[in-house]
Image 1 (spheres, one colour):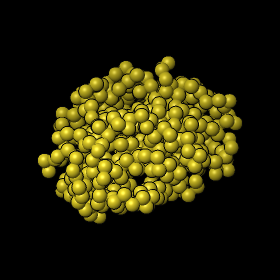
Image 2 (cartoon, one colour; image 1 turned 135 degrees about the vertical axis):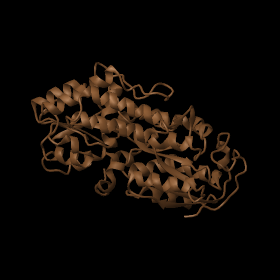
Image 3 (cartoon, helix red, strand yellow; image 1 turned 90 degrees about the vertical axis):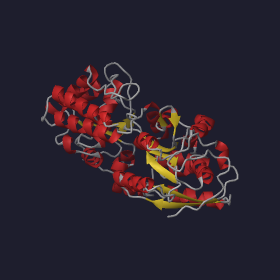
Image 4 (cartoon, helix red, strand yellow; image 1 turned 90 degrees about the horizontal axis):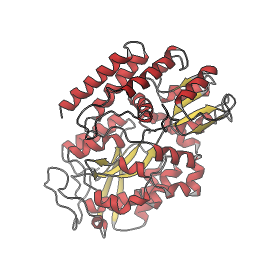
Length: 427
């Protein structure tokens, strides 16, 4: 992995993570002007498209977005792409996009949306239905990444980059990566413990869901209309995590740690295990106390079940208010195609397509291509709901309360369930 990419990534790790001109929309599905098209955008809409396209994307910390735009424009297809960089903060990115979408401005043709925003944006009719495009290109992508664009049996974006957490372990303390969380905690207790993201924020939701999914639990019912989190699996997982804090297996202070605090704790040599994202691998190999003394593995299982990761990443959607959807689709296809996926991978961000991981330049930049591809393939989307922000907040606040000793497991689960139900009732 390139050192520059990861040094820059520190600036926005927890996330991390201009006017558009009109053109020929012939062959596209029609819109009412109030939101998304009534029918899916045809793959043919990109054929012979011309004009300008603005991509509203997160801060280009690796330079991959700029390089992809330069490569696309050099092909002289008649479509000219330009980048509008948004904030480094995921919350601010979302707010910047929503402000434009609520105003129905055509400023952004292509939107780089966090995978957890799909349902919200689709429900508000802010983005185009790309189901036909996805079906035509489905085989190119790691299957799990495609499902992050699914809402109500339609697909609203194409995956651009992905992410899934890994288990880091000290090779000078344990012989091999444990295959169950129970064994991880047992070996951690016998050595220097485990560190993860236990602060009340999105990272803790991911940590908790990784164990919950592996235990066979779920957050919502099958159609997303009711909470399913008040379950034996939820109590079992939360009890397990609470016990790890109470008996000192988890790092002292873990309930205040995000990604960077966790990484620095592990790099100081004070933990045997760490749950974190792939970015921490290259940085760890620059840290004197753990360099050459750790390895990584996909997440272990729980309760006799296989391990389950939680997907991160960014998908590319087309604004319902774009004046040039055909040209926007041409740009999206390029970003998610061979060249775009190679360039995002060379920036040390995990690509979404299968083939990109076989590119020599990507393998060199990522450093752990097979392990990361396996982790992404095994991971699952977070709950798909327009109300996901409220659902996640109910999870991380109550899990943190239990870990911090402010609530019992039963109290935390019942409150979590009540708050999710209250959020769903507003929809």
